[in-house]
Length: 176
Image (cartoon, rainbow, N blue to C red; front, side):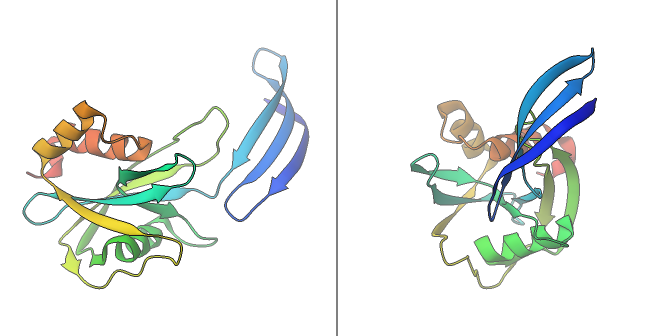
């Protein structure tokens, strides 16, 4: 692949939009719109009794509130692990006794550079939540059977949460 030209048409607080003219494999010339993002973390918090913490918050882009795993952007110069610990505390008020990196994935690689890193948090200790000023978060605790039911009924609509919950339900190494 070869980039012929690249132009930033928007540079915001969270994303930057770039338009690239490229030669792709097979010698195909194309124009590609790329949403550039620093990356983010997703945290699958497991309580000692096996329940999973989800957060419910309003998402402007969808016009509704969604059940989601803890997640957030990686700040400039921040390690993914540090971002995961920060987001867990901010959104839930819990600190993790252990935090394991599971895998990373691209949520929408056709146009978005964002890579999400999924972590599993265990040994949770209650502290004090400190959500950002524009976040209104409700916390829910769900057993695996409840998560299966939520998947079947379409109550989990967020992509990163689908990835994490499906991993949990299909993984032997995820505990209970």
